[in-house]
Amino acid sequence: MAVQTTFSMFQELLKESVAANSSLDSVMQAALRSRVDALPRLERLELGARNVDGSTGVTVSEPNDVITVPDGASGTVDWDLATFSTPVRISGGDGPCGALVGGIGQGSNPPVAVDDITLKYRLSSGGSWLAFGPTVTIPSATSVQFRAEIATQTGDHDLPHLHLVAEQL
Image 1: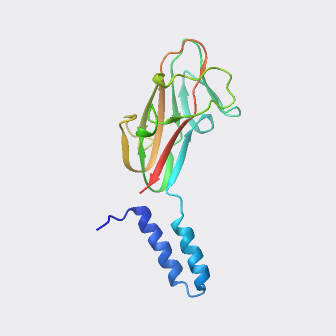
Image 2: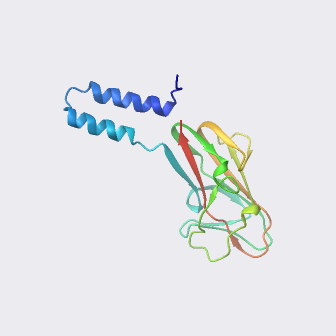
Image 3: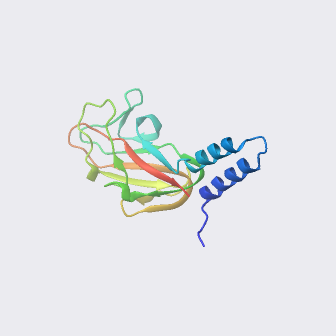
């Protein structure tokens, strides 16, 4: 017997609702069921300058979508708490530091090296920070906040955008 996830139960409820609606003809019911089947299960989570909640030791330029770590400095960046309507699983196995590394917005400095980025997460804004990396999977969460701890840089560097994939359960 297959285990039904929250997401699959949601899909089944939508399909049953479509089937029970007597005002829809069979063609419309089939079209709606097809759309319900195609609902996206994966949600992209981008960590960049536009969703920074707080930072130390770095400069954040929201209009240019750049986070700069100055020469001789280390820093931390906390991103906004992400909230999901259904529980999600997030795997750190998608990228070298637990996330896929993207561009640097409109920055002009070299990117911070992946080895200089340590990711952490917590499941609420007041929770304890936990290590996040290639071997970590958050099995089920409806909210999560990420932090990057950046090692001391030699020369100005821009923190690349970090991308995570949240899979609805």
